[in-house]
Length: 194
Image 1 (cartoon, rainbow, N blue to C red):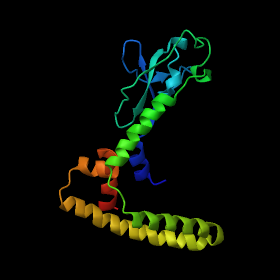
Image 2: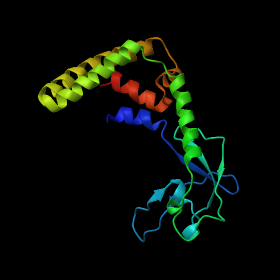
Image 3: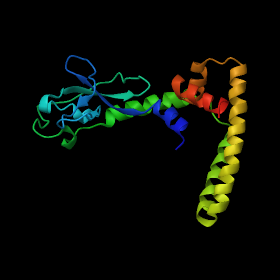
Image 4: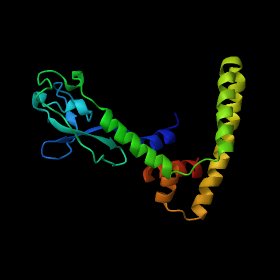
């Protein structure tokens, strides 16, 4: 996937987050694997199991890389959770935090600029045709993609200049595209400075 699209998607990458008993959100958990320059770490919810000196999660909640944190909290009942085995092996219900994150994404999607139905249909048809070409005529598919790259670069540059000429604030553009300001800045710059 294109690095800019990865950056745009990363602006709203969700995960199950944790809070400690004192209500703080912990930093990453580091795993001591002996001597060496690299120390692996994790922010996965199951790393906060209290074993081997690691912090123990008290609450789970939905989180997003954009900084959003779910208001709902889902307590972990340590009286029934195994204290001597990894937390990821326990039968922990993650549906609440995941649903909260999905609701957050719905708000983001609803705030983004909708594509006209005709354009959505056209793009869907293009994908269907390219999928067939990949199997039946891969060289034709590659030629079509080369032509599309040119169209995308030219149209993207025109759109980026138009946004610049209109002095649209980055936060407005980010909301319209459903991503964050840093990702939009990179996205626009890639079109303006190919």
